[in-house]
Length: 101
Image 1: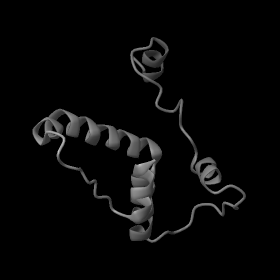
Image 2: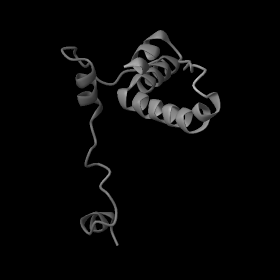
Image 3: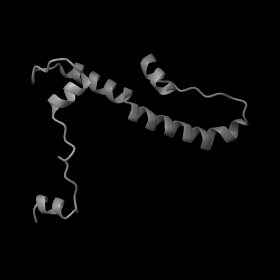
C-alpha cells in the first residue's frame, strides 16, 4: 500500500500540497529584495529571527490572546467582582503593540 495510493483514497493528506519553497517564502517576506540562495547563517541569529517571527505572527498572537481572554473571563473575572484590572506581559514593546490590536 503506497503513500500515493493512500493520498488518492483520502486516508492521509498530501503534506507537499501546501509546500512553499524557501525562495518563494523569502520573496514574500522581503518584497523587492534579491535572494542570493542558500548560504551559511549563524545558528543563534537564525533561531532568534525564527522565534521573533513566530512570536509576532498575527495568527499566533490572536490565538494566544483568545486563550488569555477566555481564561480570564472563565476563572478570574467572577472572583474579582468587577473591582480589578488585568495586565498582560509580553516579550517586547513591539509584541505588546501587536497584542493590543
